[in-house]
Amino acid sequence: MEDLTYRLPQTRTVAAESDGTNHALDARRVAAVPRAVTPGLPGYVVDADGGVLVDAEGNSYIDFASGIAVTSVGASNPAVVAAVQDAVSHFTHTCFMVSPYESYVAVAEKLNEVTPGDHAKKTVLLNSGAEAVENAVKIARAYTKKGAVVVFDNSYHGRTNLTMAMTAKYTPYKTGFGPFASDVYRAPMSYPLRDGLSGPEAAARAIHMIEKEVGAENLACVVIEPIQGEGGFIVPAAGFLPAIAAWCKENNVVFVADEIQAGFARSGKWFAVDYEGVVPDLITTAKGIAGGMPLSAVTGRAEIMDAPVVGGLGGTYGGNPVACAAAMAAIGQMEELDLPGRALEIEAIIREELEPLLELPQVAEVRGHGAMMALEFVDEDGRPNAALTAAAAAACKEQGVLILTCGMDYNVIRLLPPLVIAEATLREGLRVLADAIRANA
Ligand code: PLZ
Image (spheres, rainbow, N blue to C red):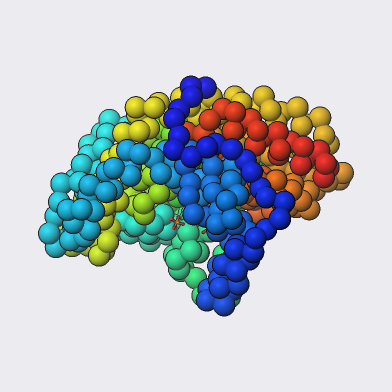
């Protein structure tokens, strides 16, 4: 993997003794912030670059989280920093609906160009992933004049009321927050490790459920993560996505790919649907799109995107000019540094370092694409092993490697390093992880 240059030393250092700074900051958090927002890392970040995060006590952590798949180009990528500084020195905000500016249009043009398919496309810009998903559903309903929404087992689409209804996992995302939006139905997902079905078999099972329990004549859209993120980094069996997309096309149902976590070079392709040549009608993006600035988008077929009435889409901040400048710089970096290619190199290194762990009976699978890889853990009876997952992640954190878990059963470790991470840093973090798994297995 090619070496890049970094502003901060790409080292892992955790002091044996704390000077109390992080603890004091955490005491302020506990007093000022509701317990519902509880961070994973004990350290409070003061700087970040390349593959490392530095905390208020000077500890330097290897970052395998990227702020949940956001800082793909790095958390202080110089091109993004320069673009943000330039934009912010001219104007911070005007509201595109009130007084427009060029960078919004430039981001829309860029997304229309880089997303799958060569048909005419249009893009609306928003703030968060959940807001993009909400808008995709609004657009699909306006276009089809139908109301129902189909999502899948294990799916994650956000924390707003509609997207909570679309999200599978109850605790913690929905606990105490109902009633939820109606007309949302959950179809069985392809989960090769657990169901043993081929892609076409799993698709037939899902389509049967959709036809019998929802009815195509009522269905506005099917929304699916091409690689499920929070739900466990589940890669559907080959042929599943194409079969669902083909059924949607035959039945006047809008096929929406939620690429908020898997998109923008993360999977080793520009978009995860590219692995199977699937062209979604609508695609939602966020996270990696703007180098850490809040921005999201819905991109899709021009005739679908133009279905809502004039004034029907928008919001005060959607497509903020500073976030748009950051997006143009971040996407430029993905092209210039060939970050899809780098994600594939990261996958090869992860497989080389972690696949030997498959000899442990507790490691059921090493799976994923690109820099979106995961390990699923089981116990001696083949049941989900949340205890080992939590213990390994905690041991990593203690040793200066920030690891995220996921999965409906809390038994998956996921790896989401920045795509600009250095090879030596990546290997060092993976070896800490491998040792932590062996020590706790
Ligand atoms: N769709 C596929 O992964 C966000 C959220 C973590 P927002 N995933 C991380 C958490 O605990 O809140 C996500 C996603 C997919 C939609 C979203 C929602 O994106 O930007 O968090 O709203």
